[in-house]
Amino acid sequence: MNQNNLKPLDCHVHIVGNGSSGSGCWIRLRGAKRILARFMLANFGLPVASLKGDLDRLYVERLLHLVRTSSLGQTTILAHDNVYDESGNIIEGKGSFYVPNQYVLRLGREHPEFLPVVSIHPARKDALDELDRCLEGGAVMMKCLPNCHNINVNDPRLKPFWKKMADARLPLLAHTGGELSVPVVNKAYQDPRILTQALECGVTIIAAHSATSSGVFDPNYLPVLSQMLDRYPHLYADNSALCSPLRSKHLRTCLQEKLQARMVHGSDLPIPVSGVWLWLRGLIDYGTYRTLEKIPNVLERDYQLKKALGFSPESFTRLRGLLRTSYTVRKKS
Ligand SMILES: [Zn+2]
Image 1 (cartoon, rainbow, N blue to C red):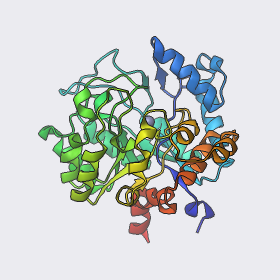
Image 2 (image 1 turned 90 degrees about the vertical axis):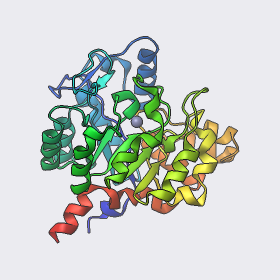
Image 3 (image 1 turned 45 degrees about the vertical axis):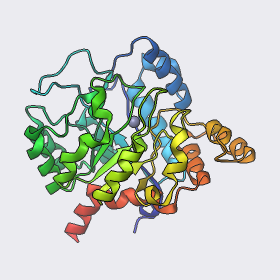
Image 4 (image 1 turned 180 degrees about the horizontal axis):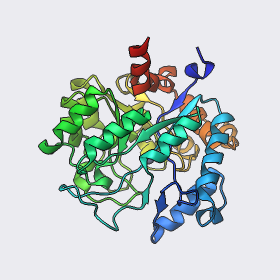
């Protein structure tokens, strides 16, 4: 067995680009989001000037370096689809960035460090065909943000899409709870109950950020998610972005046995990673905070912080058993 197969995995790492390499990626930043993007890039270890330069190449090279010099074996790389209305037409001007499926699938083939995660708005007129193309191309998971992509997962018209995903054993990483970095189109879709139909169809789902609140006035859906875990054994949660100022408030609950049993490790890179809120909330001591804050590799820092918090060893490798690759490998052997 490849040694990398035993190493920890990160289920939630974004790829961004500006199309400089012909990737088809784009970023559209307005107002405060522009400042946030610069802050994120600096935290990720890239100069702000790369936004207008060869961002595609620089981002991939930097991420490869971070994975190779960390304790992790592999990270996912997430595609990001356009925003569509329920009739399957693109809503122009709503999305803030785009990452094509074919780009992450190609990167996944080129670099064993990357696990390609595609993004398909299920209301797209070509959604089922795109799903076929992605499965063919080696997709290991699907990612979407129902509140930002405007996806009513419970729309009965989308049932064939979720059925097909379930049949293909393609899991879904779905954003849950509030969102600050990407424009929200439909706030009601941040409630994890929006995922019910896909769960009923048998899709394995990882609820990103454990449905916690990201803004001061955001509802916290963690209790709702916790109830859903009882009902759906194929529902999981990730701990991505939980080291942030507000989400860190919910870490104690996420560390309880019930949530731990379904927790999947994720960073949400390039979202900044710092242990300061964990120390201020009394979750780690000052010495640990100071030591881990000095780790220059953000991917590694996030991993070490999650370990110091007490997330179980299984949370770092659980993803392996959920991804479509493991199913494919099992089927072939
Ligand atoms: Zn994310």
